[in-house]
Length: 161
Image: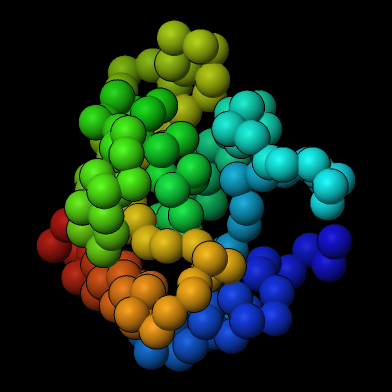
């Protein structure tokens, strides 16, 4: 409703992660893969994210980030699935992806089989947890560590791109 990513406790975790990575809020672009308003009483379903993914990909194309840190499994799955990477199907598999950079390379066409626009540049994806679901300190530490990993990639971008 405010247009600001995360609220209350999750915003505090997000800010801690940025601070630990020595990033300022003005140096990053934070967005949601959900581009429409869903009533608070409704459960957000995968289809809502798929519907909005084209808008997310167009944003990425405009910004052309070198590193994308996805905060939550849905965005990670949308990006990996559209680029034909193996998609984790169970929560245990998702754990294997956190904090591990994945190179996303564009294909020859900018549209996939579903006619969804895909960004035309390569970037690194660093998945992490959604700060809104943090219920213990160990997950908070993992988020901070994952954001630091994303920042380290930016610091050595000359070697990677």
